[in-house]
Image: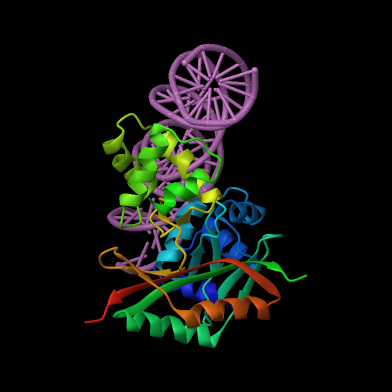
Length: 134
Length: 134
DNA sequence: GCCATGATGAAAATCATTCGCAAGTAGGAA
DNA sequence: TTCCTACTTGCGAATGATTTTCATCATGGC
């Protein structure tokens, strides 16, 4: 059984057809869809889902930490399921493709920099923008 | 004479009263103002400056690299004069205050991670969000 | 099965930002 | 200096993403 569904059931939020469709669309996504794209995908499962419901759902999922919201600079927020292993993103400026990466040294450095400044790190955002070599 | 004015004159864009006011407001700012705040400040110098002009000007300044645009997650883009020494930001989640920092190891790591993934780093965004220790 | 509390769809409302346009002006050319 | 034209401006309307309103509907504990 999916992790996301299990986590969702722990939030106390009601399970409804639109929400099931949105959760399913999210689990089926391998990319980082924005709300409108997610709406398209959810409608394939349940054609009655409204845009507003997707926006409401994404906000709720984000508040409960089940989903992460990103702004990759193109005007629409994009989402991905939260995972145990944190990763950051590199955006290919030529294709818009998003590459995920995970780097221990970087994680450690973030914590250490925050501490040096007198802060406890609560959240962070690292995005690299680049072009393919050659 | 200000660096910003000098750099602006090299862009080929015309110098007008509204633009001079916006540039001055920017130079007088020690924080990371958003477009509307900048509009307020520019109006103190030249009360006729319109919002649209501020937005147009900020877009132009960004395109010429004289200014950096940030999204610290509060819905409005915020700006700061570009500087020779690059720095990143740590946002105090309790006060909203923005602390600038510069870390050699972090800069090097960003380049190295991008290269390892087969990319040439063109731009990046690092934001740490934290709460003061104690 | 009942019903209070949540959830939903549709459309209107917000908010930051951009655009259209008619009128004004910087600044190189003559 | 004066002219002329392309660049700018202010204003208000337009946009586009996201949020809210509201009347109606449905979940899930009892």
